[in-house]
Length: 392
Image 1 (cartoon, rainbow, N blue to C red):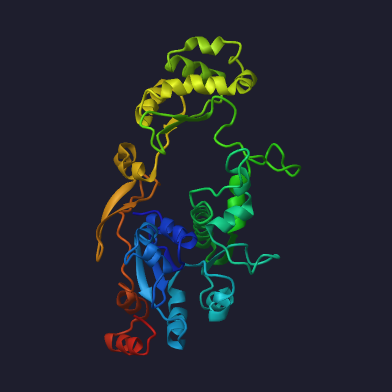
Image 2: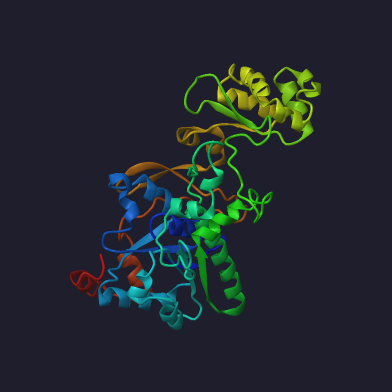
C-alpha cells in the first residue's frame, strides 16, 4: 500500500512549481487528477515540442481531465467534482482564480474537508502580491542571485529551478501535514506559500555571518581552501572535480590521497588561515594532480579515500550515471504518443510505500473515466458537454 493511497487531488497547476508539488503527492500514491483547459498545460509545448520532455518529467503518475472553466458548464463540473476530493492545488497568476470564482470560499463551502493550496510568486498579501513570478524571479527576490557568481562578477542565476521545484516540495509537505490533521479532525484548511519565501529558506546558512547587518558577498567556487573546483583530464567545459574539505582530518586525508602527505604539516598549508593566504599555490598543487585523471576517476580515488568530492556532472552524465541508474532514479517509460522516454522518478525510498513510475497522460485521456466515476455521467451527457465545448 502506498503512503498516500486514498488521497485524491484536484490538480489545477501548470509549468513547474505546482506540478512539482502534485507529482510528489502522486509518487507517494495519491490519485492526482490534472484539470487542464482545452489547450492543456502550457508546459506540454515547451521548446515547441509536441510532447515536451519538460511536461513528461513533471507530470508522471497523474490523470488528465479537460474542463473549459471559461464556460458555465465546465465550471459547474469542477464544482460538482470538488466534494469528491481531499486536496485542491493551483499556481495560476494573480487574480485568475478570483476571476473564475473558484476560490476557497466557494469550494470550501461545497467540501468542508477540502485542503485548498495556493502557490503564488509573492503570496496573497503584501506590496508585491499582484506581481507575476517565475523561478528566476523568485530567486532574484529571495537573494540567491546576490550570492552566486564570481567575486568581481555580476549577480548570477542559480541553474537548478529551486524557485519552482523547491517551492513545490515545501507545499507537498504542507499538504501532507494538513491531510494527517484532516484524518484526525475531518476538517480541511487553506494553505498558501510564497515562492519568494520558500526560496529564502535556502538562504539561511549564507546569511548567518552578517544576518541583518550586511550583504553576504559572492565567493565564486571557493569557500576557504582547498574547497574549490579543479580541472581534470579531457579539458571539456565540465571536466572538473569539486573538492570540499572542512576539517583538519579531511585535509590530512586529501594530502595522503594525492600522494603528498607532507603538505599536511607544511607551515604554508597547515592551518585553514594559512591555506587561504597561500590559496593560489595550493590550488596549483592540487590541480596538477587532478589534471592527470578524468573527473570520474579522480572522484573514485578521492571518494574511496574518504575525501568529500564529486565530478562536476553535466545533464548528460545524470542520465548515464551508473550510481543513479542502479538506485532506480532514472526510468524509461512508454508514453502513449511519444513512445519510450527517459524520465526521472522519485528520489524517495520508502520500504512500505512503493509506487511504479508511469508516463504523463495525454491531454484529456481520463476525462470520461473521471467524470463517469465521480459524477455518474453517461456517454450521452458527456457527448452533449463536448458539443458545448465544456469538456474534451
